[in-house]
Image 1: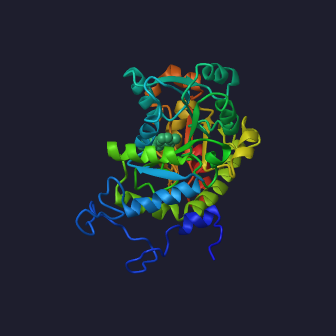
Image 2 (image 1 turned 90 degrees about the vertical axis):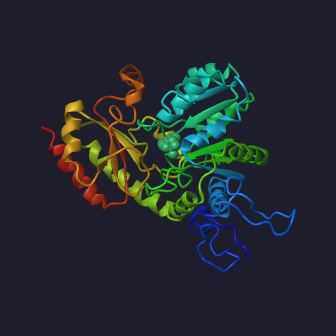
Image 3 (image 1 turned 180 degrees about the horizontal axis):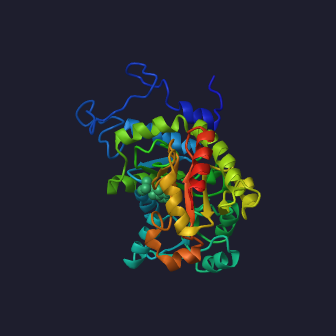
Length: 385
Ligand SMILES: *Cc1c(COP(=O)(O)O)cnc(C)c1O
């Protein structure tokens, strides 16, 4: 008898042993771009891989289940997933976005606004007065990103959903930083979830991909239809690799966040550190919201060196186990310097307003031994002269 599967089981085993051709335990990779008609005028489930592909469909089904949605569209990147989501906003419709959203998201929203396709307001969503004022302008869509990048600020998804329900606004959450293993926005009332599957879902830093998951069947259908129209659906090979990554999602994230908490505690007591931003620390300003809406603290954190840019230079030069690189969510531990890397495009004034200082570093904690990671941080902090 089929049992009600927990999300962990879905991640590990959705689609396993369902192959009808040979009983393959692992669902096969169907690279084929096209599928033969059974007979004249009689197509089958699959005809052309831009529209639908069996490998991509298993990934989509798995992601929809993990987010507790009714359907998912798997796209070529996180950015194409966000662009697909924005296709649900009518001409000139207002989108409320976080003032500290992902740089690529900021660029996309600003470009669409400049072209007159949509209107956008960038708002500090932790500021209830600013958020209320923006809601007064009758937005069609509110985009939420929590925790935020790179300062790990957490916003209350349920509160934003509740406010949105007073009008006609839909709520979308970019769940890239936590993955469905640690946060399920649709269960908090959101209408859509967006992912850069490049990050935790694939988890091995070898695919660029994205997904949009919808809570409503008509929305899921409309998104799938537009993804086919514009041709942004993901390749079968990328889908295969991403599904392979999803199999170990929970195990990876659980291990990574255990190390992240140990690292946050180590950094917090270190004399060369001015501040640590990690939702799992009781000192974090939105620790309580994170405790309510997340099922874990995650494996992303940021910290500020007392010695500023000078300190950063010596520190990153001394790193051995950590790699200086952008992106996140992989098995390898990374450190990025927002001022010169991920957030360089913002310019100094916008960074100052957002609270991104020159001494700030962002970390994605991987699967290496926690002891090695802490030893590397310790020796690199000692290298600051
Ligand atoms: C990386 C990222 C994106 C963009 O995804 P790509 O796969 O790089 O196109 C969007 N949102 C967040 C939060 C991200 O970290």
